[in-house]
Length: 346
Image 1 (cartoon, helix red, strand yellow):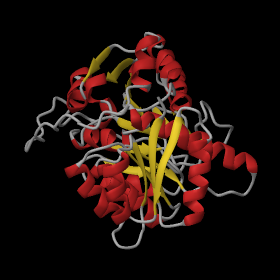
Image 2 (cartoon, rainbow, N blue to C red):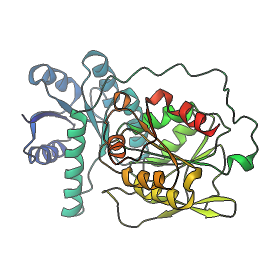
Image 3 (cartoon, rainbow, N blue to C red):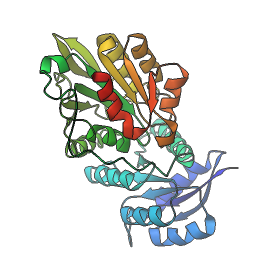
């Protein structure tokens, strides 16, 4: 049976474009389109859609307010349709916190190839949203005091280790939960989250404001410092390179890998080559298989790899693929990932 989709967008042109894209897949069916959340509310009652696509900025009620009400009264999978602007990125991150499964940027129809790529992306994300886990496990209470065996460790010791994290669908909240549980006294962290280049600066700033680890969007050429996390920018692959007694970040705009740039596999493969047994790999929620082969290379190089378990994933795709190829040393729930990292660093 086809996945029933309701489109909510104030632009008639956008509604028509989305209807054509979604309806073009045999396993997806557009059951209706609404120009605003008030109309959508009634259509949800009568049409009972499986997935909702929701614009951010609309008349009568904005997308965030509607999403907040929807997730309280009738939780369902929602894919946000966001503009590629700073405001669009900030609002989309708030929507993911409220419970939206994923988002897609509004298409730039410069040419047919770009539009085809957008069509594939939105269809894949609707399919993933349909199978997503909406009831996320409640986060364990964050400690008021950070007891860690790494406290007071000299920078030389911390600089000998590196943590690499990869995530996709559901990853913005998952990465946040891992980082806010880590103390400042941790090795450097490098991260890939699949998202557009206009979103990564906002995401890095948001993460930086929440925890003890300093988070920046990688610029390339930075020396990786303990207590710092470097997020791949949305336009480039992130890799690490040995430099003296530590590592530096490098960026490249080579072709996408697994349809992604940045790609988790690119980062993990570089960590396998340059860091080897001194690395800890973490693969979190996300659709697809990006990261599995890179994590296997890390495992073969002696790294210790942690995968998020199915129960706590929004979409159990990337961690499952890593498990299937034998790349993981352990699997744990999201609230325990930070503790497992610290335990391994003892």
